[in-house]
Image 1 (tube, helix red, strand yellow):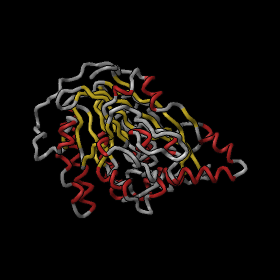
Image 2: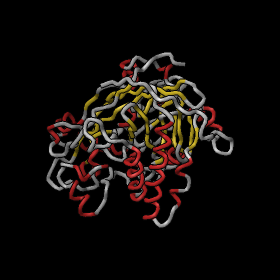
Image 3: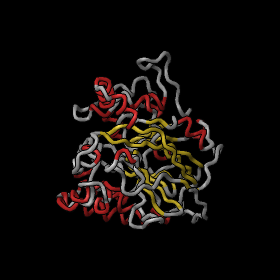
Image 4: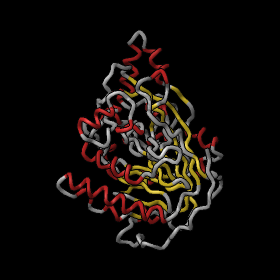
Length: 393
């Protein structure tokens, strides 16, 4: 459901975070600026005190973030549903026999905003190309396994579904490729940058080099995430598309470190742990702050005390943990815990049911009855505010 309300006039002058010693040339060029509230929190020691520092910094930043204004418009559209192991989804917490695979729905979110220079911008968040994701070693191996299993085809039909390609999403919301200024992913698991940014090389199995999906749009990526894709550790290998940078113009990337604000009402906040360079989309809307990432795949991950998925609430009670992480790659489980607390602190309560936070997983557990009892306890079902308009530039 779309909402239209009057936005508060953003304060574009304070605080002054665009000075040369604070903003890198890349950030200045895209009208973005760093977020100082989180400076140094990831260096706090010991780890219990670091969590306190992260929570306090998030609370302080939220107050300023909301006062600065709201995005112009935002719309989410589902792209595809893909299989995922239950054990990964809830850190092994599910306590009853179930299908080994559940399904996660990937969604693309289009956000329109004004940057800190007052320039209208359009961001595509999570523009996943399913053909590229299928080449990540985990999914390639899973496909081979299902091909060998007698019921593999039936399993595939149960957990796999295609809705839209990213180009279809643009058409659905009334945009063209030329309207997109930037694209970004919360992290680069199962993403092939060649599919988005184009490549001078021919991808295996194709007949010609890939053209850019969004014209001249650039990919915003945390420097640690891009470095990971350049040099994979064996513990990271299964989830990244090796060779995904082949033939991609380096000028198509805008890298950043730490936390950044793209404009009033929109930020990319560093949330390490799931991956070293993981970041979360944070937007301010007429209903308050929303957060999107894949640190969890349902609200049950962030709010296990409310979960009806067997075992998840007991996980919360047994270990005294306020989150239950999405745990396919725990590059640093303590960092991921802190990052999910950071997200919880920033997100506002849902208007429809204030028990639940406005956290929209970038890839969300499918609410399909055939996956019962591993279905989300509460689902937002997407996000829509304002009117997406073409030709804003």
